[in-house]
Amino acid sequence: MIVFPILIPFAFAILSVFLWEYQRVKRVLAIIGTGLLVVTNIIIFINVQQEGIQVLQVGNWPAPYGISLVVDLFSAIMLLTTSIVAFLLAIYSWKGIDTQRRKYGYFPLFQFLLMGVNGSLCTGDLFNLYVWFEVMLMSSFVLISLGGERSQIEGGIKYVILNLLASILFLSAIGLTYNLAGTLNMADLALRFQAVHSSGQVTVIAVLFLVAFGIKSAIFPLFFWLPASYHTPPITVTALFSALLTKVGMYTLIRFFTLLFPMDSQYTHTIILISAGFTMLTGVLGAASQTDIRRLLSFHIISQIGYILMGLGLFTEYAIAASIYFLVHIILAKTALFLSAGMVEYIQGSFDLKQLGGLYKNRVGLSMLFLLPALSVAGLPPFSGFFAKLGLIIAGFESGQYFIIGVALVVSLMTLFSMTKVWNEAYWKTPKESKYLDQQRTVSAWRWVPSLIMVLLSVLLGLLANPIFEVSQAAAAQLMDPSVYIRAVLGVVR
Image 1 (cartoon, helix red, strand yellow):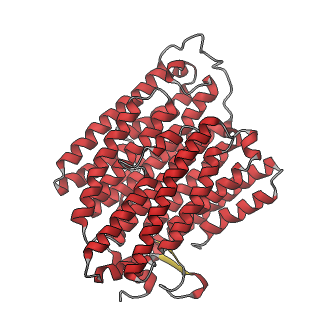
Image 2 (spheres, one colour):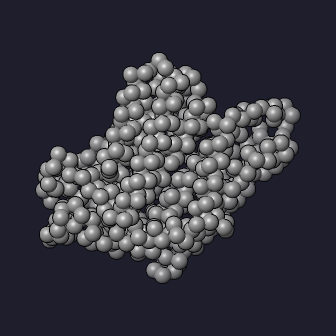
Image 3 (cartoon, helix red, strand yellow):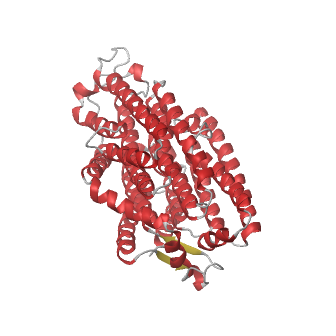
């Protein structure tokens, strides 16, 4: 079944292109397609849990000569999480995307982006990973520019130039890898890199991949394209990007530096750990200085990426498990925050905190849809963000990395400060009458129902932290023992 996460969005994208003029039909197709994707990924997740790593050798060509699709527990977790978010965003898009953008092809592009994301999560070789990243880049560039507004074009140009640079570095690293090892199959590479006598060459390639994926993941100091572009499209598109794009970059970094480049961990993972600290700090400082909700939340994407990177830098099984749990947490919580911000703008006509206010008095329910994920992102118990950060801090103590623990705690306090600022300005204070719009404006169920489900899932992730963290630990155990992956793909550890 592991080819279905790629085929389903591809088929629905093509179908949406053929039905270009039928806007309502395309919206229904997006919901059906992503719903099927959720069901498929639930089955895949169960299969991986019960039977182990699932592998498909396309065309029956044996690895490493053919194209391998591989889904281990880490991939299955990511596939399931991203498909649930995509399904809820497809529902939100019914009212969250205007008619003009729907006519310009929002829904086919939405499906093509999902195809690229799922292909990246399932592929077992470097070249096809590059191809899937380019599918994501093309779809996301059009989505970020869709509508043709000046700010969108400016943001889209910055976005695509930096990501094209990352693609060039990625392709260069692939060329050096093939020249050194003679293969691009990741399982085969893991074996051949172990046998390379000149570990310095492997380290150079590792750093090149780190820079390429660092740009795509928005880690320090390569993140500046994200706050310059993510606030420009409609909030639905921003939520989609926040949930999927940088998280696929982080998925790839974790995959590469556990499977392919574990041999010089003292050097590479020290770089990663230093970058994690600066990523957390610069992201949260940028967020604290903003008065636009979209820009504030965009900077928090960077800050939270730093926590995931921290687990990879610590490079213990428990730290990797905490990073996986943190990935799921931040995908759900951050998407809920962006959707909540979209409803704020719909009611009051602005994202500017100075022009907002009074929402708690008039819309208690909608206010809770912001408050709960905000407290989770800030790391307060009993929400998932608390347990995610607690896992990373425990891993830091076990590794004796006290400085990064201090940074993580300070950043968490500053995150709480910035979330409190949004709450006070948008929800608590009395609004200025000159800027005050009709608080009785009806918010469609197409907006608040998916937002509510997203928040409930985020809360449930915290309430069920122990069993879910156990699944994350099982995924981390697979990642930290590359022989399991190699045996599943190649048949034997040669």
